[in-house]
Length: 273
Image (cartoon, one colour):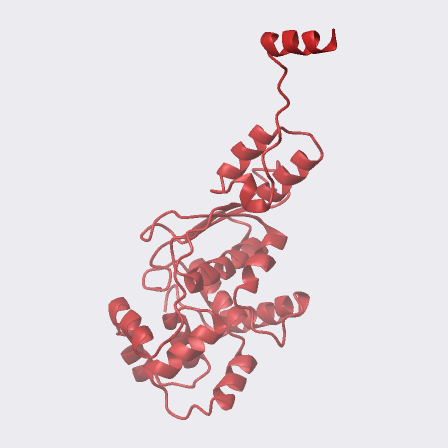
């Protein structure tokens, strides 16, 4: 079928995942939120609350033929969406950085692959394989002795790997742990219902953190201040971009030396005569 992954595509993605997991030394480790640190090795990353219905993120490729000004690509992650969605978006963007070197916008309906371009489907499959490695998933299934899949244990697995519920449903189908009909049944649950199930089964919330982080701006600003390259006021200005104050980082306002007034000078002079 047009724009669908074939066996060759999937085999290539699996090989790429294996290579990158080895490169990152994560072959026997659940990635989860470590994906943010991995992404920062290959891109300059901004986290900003763009809104719940806004794109999950986007990538601006630099250092390519049409833009050689920067060595690293620029990636923005929408911190208005749940952490598990941020994790998936980061892994999705890594695929584009590693293998396509093309700009990308991650739509809010990323997990709905209907009418998506083949490149987006490849990036989604790579993200799913990278975050939910099959041997590790089977290991957890065995440990929790899952014989029959329910919404509860699927949510528990999704929580363990820090991925969206729908991603975990698809992964279980991809490793042939559930049938096509089961996949459709589990995917037919609404987002509202999924949130209600999380509360029913006491699944920890992966709520949006709405954080603002402009790559390593805060670190550089503090280092520049401590080296006396910038003033305290400039430090305040730079940290404000990340909704921080110097005091939040243990930096107290400088004591300001003020000169005595004329009356104080006269009084001092009188005392010395």
